[in-house]
Each structure stands twice: as C-alpha cells, then as structure tokens.
Image 1 (tube, each protein chain N blue to C red):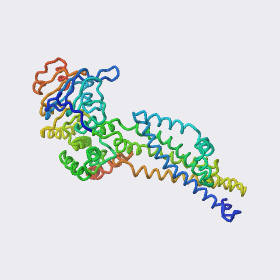
Image 2 (cartoon, rainbow over the protein chains, first blue to last red):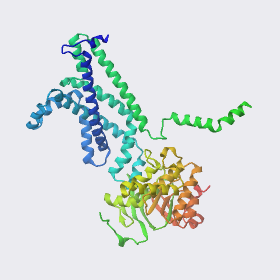
Image 3 (tube, chains in turn purple, red):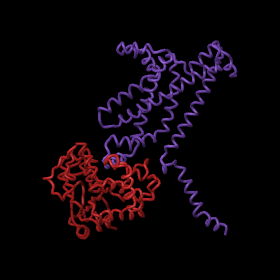
Image 4 (cartoon, helix red, strand yellow):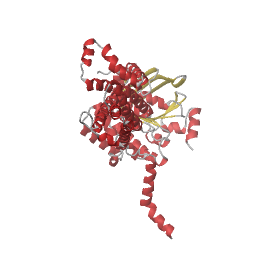
Length: 263
Length: 255
C-alpha cells in the first residue's frame, strides 16, 4: 500500500524523503517550540500566582490573549501582520529572511507563545494545588519570595503537573501542522504534496497519520518515563505501599503464619 | 541593610514584645488587645480552647500572619511591612508546625541545609555538618538521605525541629507540634523539645501536653476568645486556676 512512497520523484528523490524532510521540520518546530513554551509558561504561570500586581496583571493578560485567539489566526498574525506593524527597518529585515526560515521562525514563535499560555495555566494550577504550609514553612525559614519559588514551590508544582503536560507536548506537535498555512513544508504539507504528485491521497495522508500516531506514542512514553524519574521517593502511586506491606508481611511474619496454618 | 532597632523600648532581656496586638479575619477578631513579653531563655506554654487565638498569636510573632494593630518587636526589630526586617526576624525565629511542613521533594538533609545555605550564606559543607549534627541531636541522623514521605510522623516532626535549629534561631515557636501525631510518637517529639528547653532555648509552645508544660514551662499563658485570660507558673495554673474559664478548660483536657 505504501509502495508508492519508494518511487522516484521528479527531482530524483523518493517520496519518502519528502515525508522524512517534513517530519524533520515538524520535529524541529515542536522541539524548539516546546522549550520556548516551557520557559515562558513557567515564568507566566508563577506570575499568575504572585501577590504583586506588576507581575500578576501582565501574566493574566498574556494568558488571556494567547490562549483565546485561534492558533491559525495567531499564525497569520505573526507571518503577515507582525512585519507590517514593527518599524519598517525591522519589518524589511524580516521579509529578507530566505524561504524555509521565513516560515519557520513565525511558526516557532506562534506555537511557542501559544503553548506557553496553556502551560502557564497548568503551572498555576500546580502551584495552587500545593498545601499552604509549604509556603509558610519557607517563609518561616526566612527564604525570600524568589528563593521560595525557586527551591520550594516550582520544583513541586512541576512534578505535580507532569501528567497534564503530556497533553501539551502532544498538543504542540499536532499544532505544527498549522504551519503549512504559512508555507512551511512540514509533515502535513509534504503529505499533501505527495498526494498531489501521485494522486495516491490515501497513501500520502495514511503515511502522515501513522507518523503522527507514532510520535504521540513516543511522546506519551517519554513523559511517563520523566514522571517516574522525577517522582518523589515515598510518594509513589497508591497501589505501591500496599504491595510493599504485603511483601514485608510475607518476609517478616508470613512464614510462621503459614506453618501455623499447616499444623 | 541596618536594622531599625528600637532598643529603648525593650529591656535587653526581652526577646519578644507583643503590645496591644489586634488581629482580625474579616469580621472575626482573632486577637483582641494581646500583650505578651518573653524574656531570653524563657519557656512559655500557650494553651486554651480551639479558636482562642493561640496559634494566631505565635504566627504573628514571625509575621506569617500580619497584625492589624499594636506592636510586635522581636530581637529588637519591630515587625512592620518592610520585607528586609521581616526576613531578618524570621532568620532568628524558628518555627515548628502542627503538620510538619517538610519539603517533600528534598531529602531530610537537604531540608535542613536549604535555608542556611541560601539565606545565611554558609558553605555547602558547613551546612551539611551542621545539619548532620542537629539530626544526630534529634536522633535521626541515619535517615538523612531519606525523603520525608519515607519517615513516620514523629520522625518528620523531629526533622522539622532540626531544620528550624539549623538556622541557629534565638527563639523557637511550636504550633501544636504533637497534635497531628499518633499517640506513640508524641513522646519522642516531646523528649526532643524537653532537651532543647534544658539547653536554654527560648521557647513559645502552643500545646495541650500538660505534662510538658509542668516539666519545662516557666509560665503558662491561657487564652480564650482572642485574649490572654490568665498567666501563671505551671504549678499555680494547674492547681489553682483563678478564672472560671481556665477551670472549665482544664476540666475538659485532664480526664
């Protein structure tokens, strides 16, 4: 069924090379976009929880603006509108950027900033879920607000939200497909190109679908590994302590018990 | 930053001065014109029915709760809204909470080292030595590498005491340190506190452990409905409380 992917294209490559090049752009966009989103998301999320209005109000505005405009519209804003509203020298410089990068950078900015607003809300939820005593204990030790966030609040909040960040990781790489609208030849765009060149629509988009699904699985597994790696010892899932109890019972008191039963 | 000293208002022996303090939560008055002075080395037990304001009072002493009126002077520094003053006071005041409030993502040793390194600015190795020394003192040094969730409640509370002591505070505040513990773990925590008291630490304890009060307290302060009703030496207070409310309270807690 996917045989057509290994046929020669007009430019001497194979169709699968087109697909792989698209995958490369998709991964690059998702990977670098994720770190932008994570960095800004944590800062804005913290900003949402501080008492100081100088930080809290801009953080609130950020979240409301970036979360509530459709990704597609944001993509167009960064690509078409942004170069026009900045001073013309900068705008001209932006328009001079050569083709793949001219689409890549606006797409990166768009996805990074959009996902950041979603991560910020997760971070805020994580911080607000922490017991109040943590903040009080840090205060009582004389830690400043910065030190309290840096060493006590944020490390715990991030651990708490790893499972819900999984859906943000999946979200950002799925949203990379929107970048095709501003001309980035990522996975979906390449699939469409293959479909147009070969008329094998089912094969082209079927292949893209399989690749997206595999990426989702990998992302899910990776996040599960991270979740396990950063889990605080002693605070394992609810089923584990019961298992341990059972094991220690068998070790300590189990044997005489069994012998008694045998009698 | 130089500390705003108000030395003429306090005798040198007084380490905590609470004067006419009022604290409200909305329409509810938690502290109503409370005045309390604590001398260096003194051990005070605060008791009273729940909702009487005893926890609120000690939480005001390190500004975890902000008082609405009156003055609080700790170690010569008046607590205002100046962050620098508040943090410098908090360094000198150790606090132990009912619910331990250890940092679950840090090991026992790291819990004890965080503030000394970041706030006092001492070196990693010095902080470690100090932490291990104090953990030995609370008889828990072999658990230094474990995480709080791997310890029993009594062990966690002893770590919390060691963590506070690592800042080398001049005064220790205890907010019902044994109330969240299983009965068999109360003793180990109280023993630690008695030891600390015998070393001369200034202590203000909110507790219903009357045995502890008898053994170490210089003064028992009885509060009810946001006011200090009675202050006396433990023997006097337990044998012959002057007020009806104190009598009723003692009847209820001594079975």
